[in-house]
Each structure stands twice: as structure tokens, then as C-alpha cells.
Image (cartoon, rainbow, N blue to C red; front, side, top):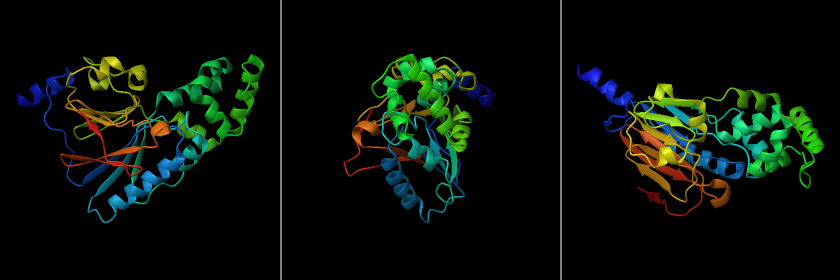
Length: 264
């Protein structure tokens, strides 16, 4: 009976036990990269150093989405993420709203007028596409879409089209933006997983698991009983963050040399 009660509480936002991971598993969850391949390279080096010699059966890298836009190195980020990756790690790639926007532009040139000012112009520049730098002419949007469609490597396209919406390990649920309070985790819809903000961020609901998310940039990591936010605005701040989870413990790795700031 107690197992059933626990499952019901989890499904309907009841109180959770302390989140944790199974023995032998360590997870590194990486926040929003937004075209900062320089920071990604630095953080991956730190993760590899941190994991060196650690006696874990499984080491998993989870990327929370928003790999592209805003920063100037979106192509380079996708080159790195579609490459071999650090030895000894499994990798899980989640979809962000900016990946959704990029794919929308590929299918609808008219959407480019929105995407351009949403960080898409920087992404196009990283692929050598400059038609929209000084133009909002609909014909130029179509030309840019056609050139981008031709320039996008197959590996990048496959990566973008096969991203996961969420992942679960132990007492943690990973999603780009967050979840809809009052809706069971297995019933969350794509729009909320990619886009939700205030309804999730301001909620004290419990979800049965602690939600690890990005999407909403803050200068500090946000740790609350029901969620952990690790989007530290890398493209603006120069700080890219990884959450390290093992057992019931958690800690953080970041680029740069500034002291870690955490908001409750």
C-alpha cells in the first residue's frame, strides 16, 4: 500500500523524498550553451578532469538544450556535440526551444523574421550565411533558408531532429524549460517542456522528482526543493554551468574563476 501511495503522490505533485541516484552512477548535466563553443570546450575539460579516476560504473553527460543562437559559434558547438565526445561517458541530448526555432525556419522561411531577432542571425553567420544581416526582405529570408538547408551538415540535421524532450534518472527529471505543475511527469507536453517559465518557476509544487532545467538565465544557480536551474546565461556572462549528481549529493562545475553563486 505504501508503494501505491508514493506513486500517487508523485503523479499528483505530492511531497518527494530526498532526490538521489543509484549507486555507481554519476551525472553531469550541462546548462544552455547558446553558441559558446569556447565555454563548452572549457567545461568539458573540467568535467573530464573531475571524472578522472572516479570509480563509477556509469558516467552520463546530459545536455539540457539551447545549443544554438545568440552566441557566435553555433556551428562549432554542433560540430563538437556530434563528434565522439569524452571517452567513458554516455551522452543524452535534450531539445531546447531554440532548436525548435531553427527547425521551424528550415521548414518556413517566413518564420525567419522572428528567429533572426531571437538569436538566429548569429547561427546563420556561423554557417557563413549573411543574406539577412541588413535585410528583412521576404525574398532574402527564402534565399537564406535555401542556403542554410544546403549548408547544414547531415550530422547536424540528424542531431537536431532526434533530440529527446526529457530524461529521468533516479530522483531527477531533466527537461529544457521545466514542467507544468499539476500534470504528471509522464503526461508533460512538448510546449511546456521547451517553453514554460513563470507557472513553473514560481510554483512550490512537488513533482515526485526534482526537475533539473535550463531555459531561464540567471547569474546564479537556482536550487529549490522542487527544481534546480542551471542556465547561467553563458552567452552573456561567460559562465557555463554543469550540475554534478551522485548518490544524494550535488555540486557544480563552472567555466571561469569566479566563486559559485547559488540562489535558494
